[in-house]
Image 1 (cartoon, rainbow, N blue to C red):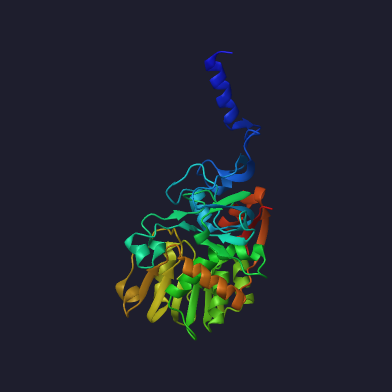
Image 2 (spheres, rainbow, N blue to C red):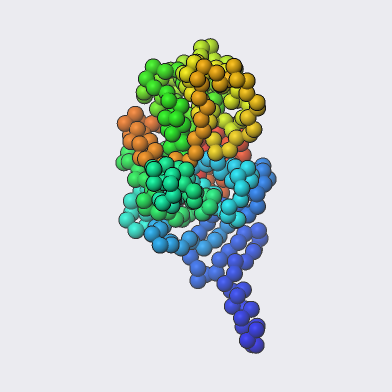
Amino acid sequence: MSRLAAVSSALKAECLIEERGRRFVPQSVIAMKAMLCTRRAPVQERPLKLTDIPEPAAGPGDVLVDVEVCGVCRTDLHVIEADLPVRKDPVVPGHQVIGTRRDTGERVGVAWLRSSCGSCPYCERGDENLCDTPVFTGYHADGGYAEVAVGLPDFMYSIPEGLPSLQAAPLMCAGIIGYRAFVRSRAGPGSRLGLYGFGASAHIVIQIAMHFGCEVFVMTRGQKHRDLAAEMGAAWVGEAYEGPPVKMDSSIVFAPVGELVPPALEALDKGGTLACAGIHMSDIPSLNYASHVFEEKTLTSVTANTRADGRELLRLAAEIPIRTHVEEFSLEQANDALIKLKTDEIRGAAVLRVR
């Protein structure tokens, strides 16, 4: 065999090969199954493919996590459908990971914020969610739609005993972001809180809000979501654009729909606050100063989370206790879960069972 032929043969042996629509790795490499996003497209086109890829290598300070379950988040939709700029291609989505650290055997959670720089002005003042150079799980780095994930121990969360992994997964993003949105809305004991949209985050926030003595009003599309809100103790439930019967002290828009912002602002009482909780939202229509922002109303956004948010949310999850409503899917059914999420067919939160 010529030297050129030998080199060519060696390269072929090291490369991933395609067979019957599946990718396989050489036997010399430890393989794992993953739902890989190789192209950005509407989830109805089923862009995730079950693929055999090499297990990730742990970099300096990293640890490997054997994934047990991974929650399915609306942010995953935005990553896959390119509502957010492409940062890694291809990418394994998923940032609501519950699994076991290989080095310690501890059950941990891996969330959206994979790391922050720790040295920019925002990190130094305690706002690591606003870091200039953050790294996000399932976006900049491969995530939890796979048998193995990688994370930094300082950004992982210890999962309380007695909290099943299936119920813990949605807390890693829906819960943490929901908690931060609740704090940003300035809701407090005895206040009236409006929730626009009633998916994974909102069905966790209603439990936090009621724990703190809030009266909760829910505006959402989809009868199953309205039924769940009523079951969970909402004082009033209506359609997404239906105005609540009384003025709100605070509100949170969870739906990624900018057109909900003006009616939500209009429904606020004097001095009220509206928090927009999504990482992506369609354009907000023009606002009328008198109707929407006068009388010292506040409009604010929520950007990622801090580790302190995650630790406080998990403390509350054990104290309240928070119970998530979960629909379980296999790893191979990730496209199905995303389609159901996009079409508002998930009652509560969707979670992939990996092992």
